[in-house]
Length: 235
Image 1 (tube, rainbow, N blue to C red):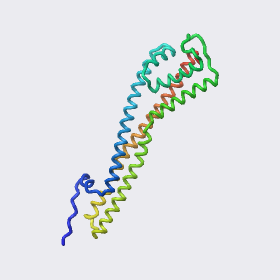
Image 2 (tube, helix red, strand yellow):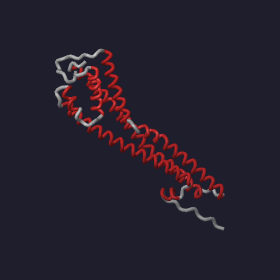
Image 3 (cartoon, rainbow, N blue to C red):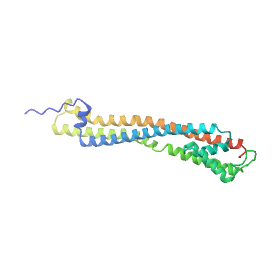
Image 4 (cartoon, rainbow, N blue to C red):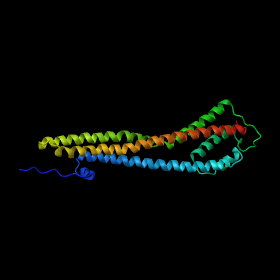
């Protein structure tokens, strides 16, 4: 009696269609991680683009004002943005320490004590940390996806190889034609895991650098704000 020939598998689609249930489940999980990864990448691209536009409007408004008091009045009319929130937080806290000082003439001095100045710096630092955390939200998930996806792919490969060996044992055939389809099916999950992990890790490194640069810009603006206040005799 002749043995039935194994189906000819000539493409990845054929391998997925004839894959075992375990392999399909692993591929489904990897596909979901891929969707989540690209969603986060798109979300963060849009977020940084929006922040860039808001920052340009903010600095254009601030640089066009003759003094801190005029800048504060103009910024209060703008939509909220990271730099405007940091600016408002610093000026609002200063106004609580020196009520009415922002509205008075520039010739009058309103010095802060050393402890009050340290408190102002702490308020700015806290706001910078909050803005950084808001921008970095979801970014660590890319690192998680980049680490987990290859492991899931390896899990699918191990399960696929086990199924191939079970098939060989049940059919009693160990030639290359009988082993190749099972091994090829098993390797699909490894390829899928790597295909998801590589862009996720690259995006994570890029976005982490952007977040670090954004935090540095906020810290620089916070220091410039304190210098501006000192120059106008508010400190």
